[in-house]
Image 1 (cartoon, one colour):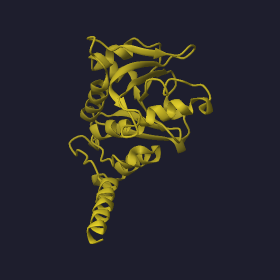
Image 2 (cartoon, helix red, strand yellow):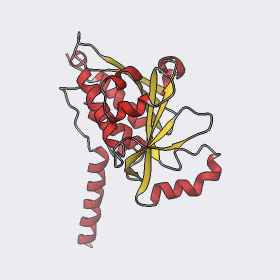
Image 3 (cartoon, rainbow, N blue to C red):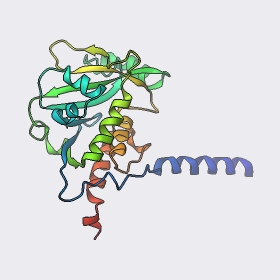
Image 4 (cartoon, one colour):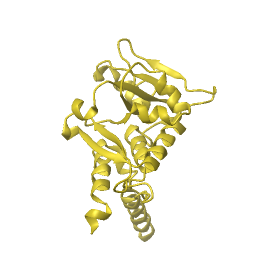
Amino acid sequence: MGARRFILAALAGGLAALWTWTAPGDPALWPARAGEPAIEASLLDNGFHTDLALPRAALEARGGPLAEAVESLPPGDWILIGWGDATFYVDQSPIGDRLPDGARAFFAPGNPSVIMLDPAQADPRRMFAEDGRRDFRLSPAAFEAMAAHIEASLDLSTGAPRIAAARAGDDARFFASREHFSIGHLCNHWTAGVLNAAGMETRPLRSIVSSEVVATVDRAKLDTPASRD
């Protein structure tokens, strides 16, 4: 009986540790220093899924495979960027019709994934309401780290970014990703990883929900030298 209680306590302690585990930020990247040039960015939350909005010009200026993918898109000064299962994420049929596929995406191992790049003409700060949007400014180094992290997710096995899916009447393009989608690595986990690459402190396990990714940006914007002084 004592051994069983010990095992249960150890499991509970391990789960609590995972739930509160924090991936450290990088003060060399975040926040942008006063007076240095900064790149505007936004996090977008629809209550379930999170995307990032980054300026197209900055993405294209850095060159490389991600810039190549962006250059292939229709016009739009901003690029909305997200990640998800290669089938469920792309499909826009009624959610009730997709529940079996959703279960497959969550629980089957090794699901292929895609990175969405969606060009937007309007500034996301005008397109999306404040309650589902967080705006922030990236130092050049943080932007480069963020873009490099996104680029590293692209499947470049053929030597260049590869469009895996597109939708009729939709400017978004879905590029093959080298990562796999599952309950242990969902869309919001991916976005949290991108924010962490840019220097923000994140809580990986809690990032299963979009509200935690939003809270990541909120905490990062508060946790600055100015606010601590």
